[in-house]
Image 1 (tube, rainbow, N blue to C red):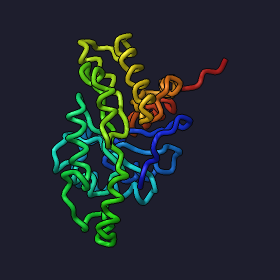
Image 2 (spheres, rainbow, N blue to C red; image 1 turned 45 degrees about the horizontal axis):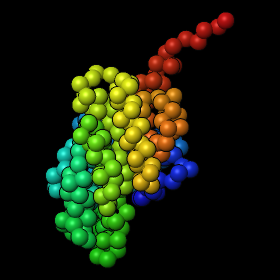
Image 3 (cartoon, helix red, strand yellow; image 1 turned 90 degrees about the vertical axis):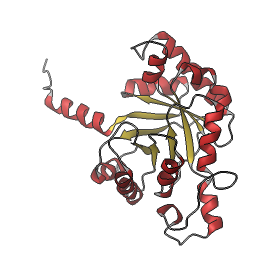
Image 4 (cartoon, helix red, strand yellow; image 1 turned 135 degrees about the horizontal axis):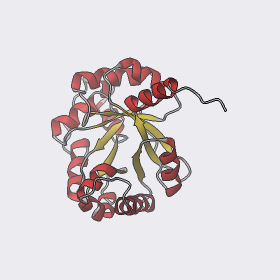
Length: 248
């Protein structure tokens, strides 16, 4: 399954998935969210778990990308082979790093090893040319999470094969020596990164904790917004259900 490229008039909404449950994928696939991000960086999701969750995503017709834990060739290859719609790549600080990731994603002009046997090749039912063409539709989104990355964001966005950027405000705050992702310095860097992505006609992505932030960043120009996670959505709904309504 593919995710459509960003449009100036369309905001794509998703959520992180941190729980190893195919039922969670099925349920979220029944929502109006456009995509899910399997968080292999911060959640206990190994290759076997990702494989089953990806199968559930396909059954639910819900596109899934994977936030990878590292940029090793074997990691990128396995995630794409199981049928991920794309990659969310943490800590991309330079155009050089971005080009290295793209090379590992691509067959043509790249380093990705070919096999006709995995899910991405429909278990041998796709011809080689079809497989190569299908692989070109994989999204590659670079996370901007440091002061260095913000300074290099325009160069990162010019890399052929990078579909956009995704601002990680918490790590960005840490890179500034701050412990508040709402600090003015973080906000200024975030707005700069979003404006740079929109000017380049690419994905301007960000993670938010609630619908108020969702709307605020959409107004700023973000067009690829990840709202919380399966864990936070469940917790918030449970807390709302446990909180008595006040009768005036």
